[in-house]
Length: 376
Ligand SMILES: *[C@@H]1O[C@H](CO)[C@@H](O)[C@H](O)[C@H]1NC(C)=O
Ligand SMILES: *[C@@H]1O[C@H](CO)[C@@H](O)[C@H](O)[C@H]1NC(C)=O
Ligand SMILES: *[C@@H]1O[C@H](CO)[C@@H](O)[C@H](O)[C@H]1NC(C)=O
Ligand SMILES: *[C@@H]1O[C@H](CO)[C@@H](O)[C@H](O)[C@H]1NC(C)=O
Image 1 (spheres, rainbow, N blue to C red):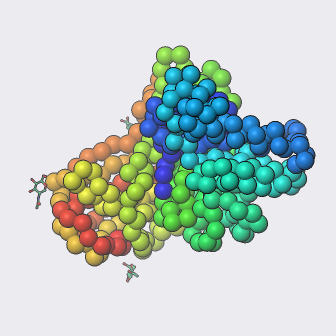
Image 2: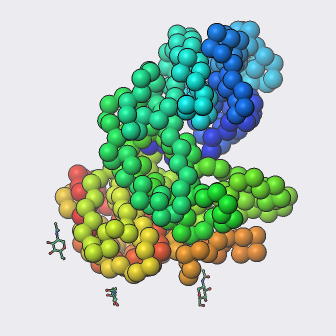
Image 3: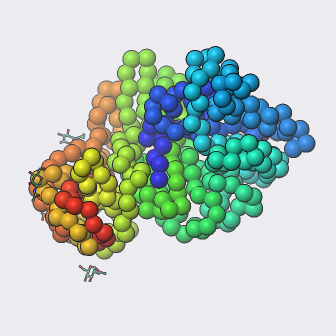
């Protein structure tokens, strides 16, 4: 899975050139979400969609066409003769519902035109394929979720139950958000989101990408709470949700291992295990959310390791705080942050304590790589 959200959230409102340049500067892959002839209050009939389709094809030529093509030459004149590696487009945003009867007709026009001109571009549908298969072709479907912390935690297994055939999933907006709630991003919210992300990680055969929403907020112009990064004209901080996402930075390209949780507290825990490589070093990373108010003692037992655990290079990182409703702020920007320490007890079988309301990553350094499964 690509956790694009760590670097770049969905950028719906930026111009194509801005999006492409920002993604290039960040080293992120761009996803262009274009207007599908539907706005919040207005929509054109499918018989009138041709100019919108042409506009999208022209924009794709602007991004990917040769510097000699009509629109590629405009890009070159702007100082960027190289093509941008645009590989994903989304046809509209939140436009597949029964108040927007033209979406499916529009979608097929865009799909056929883009597939014909750029067969490698991955096309993302707004229709939700998680409960029943889509009735139209797509490479991915977009899934958005905003819930209370408790409800999002309970939805962590959403993609364990979905079809393994058909389009992959792009969870392009997920966050703890309740209308009317003025929380600007608490530890508790970040723990529910961590459990949900663990659910995406263990299902990354079907969930290919995820991005938190929204990424940035100007503290002087708040339109939506919570957000990952808060700024004003001279300072910034990450919310607990921002720090939570840093635990998943190595998940792209990692190998996922099955996890079995056996604890009387299993109902408030969520866990995943991956192996990932940092230069020559290989780590088994076991991430566990303890969503509840109790400290939980566990025996971590990794079976099938074909490698020794090197305790001196192993580490544990914990995101927690005294109060589950703690938030960061300009006055106390690092009140809730990950704290990393050595893990001298690291071993194939080890005792571990999860503090109340916490997200813990155990990084066990392995001396050589092997097949394994983690049991707890
Ligand atoms: C789960 O833990 C209990 C209590 O420690 C133990 O008796 C049981 O065998 C364990 N089950 C599995 C499947 O490991
Ligand atoms: C967990 O283990 C620690 C250290 O072994 C012990 O002090 C503590 O009482 C245990 N807590 C629970 C809830 O069992
Ligand atoms: C563990 O890693 C350290 C640091 O790289 C190394 O010096 C030590 O030899 C390793 N221990 C074992 C048992 O491989
Ligand atoms: C938690 O409480 C202790 C004791 O009151 C205090 O020293 C510490 O700074 C608090 N930590 C956080 C993250 O608020």
